[in-house]
Image 1 (cartoon, rainbow, N blue to C red):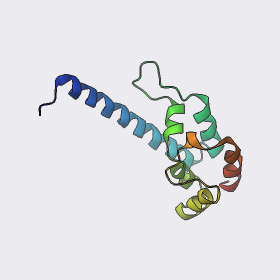
Image 2: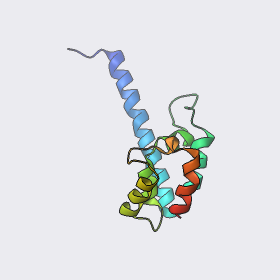
Image 3: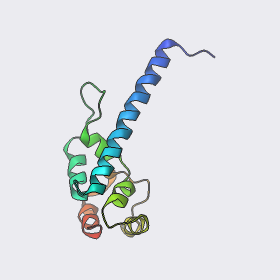
Image 4: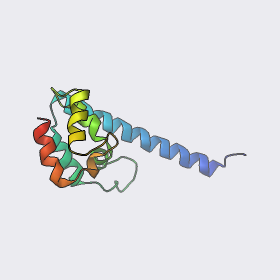
Length: 116
């Protein structure tokens, strides 16, 4: 079955948006790894602005921060490895597929304290 030009264009637009989102996630994780951004900052960014941008071409910082998996950010915290990060998340009832934006507010302070 042939793909129409409209479907092809939409697919290209979706792939470009996902690529920008992935690049934003990589920058955020690198910032955490370098110590420029803390875990509490990531939660604050995720809360600040989670609505998509008006032009829908560039994802907002809040959209990126709320979309990233918590385990990626926790592993990137200096001094916390993969095993320790996963154990702490498990202790707080959070799985590997939990996104930063889905973390309950009452658990956030305990995570920041445990991962600092």
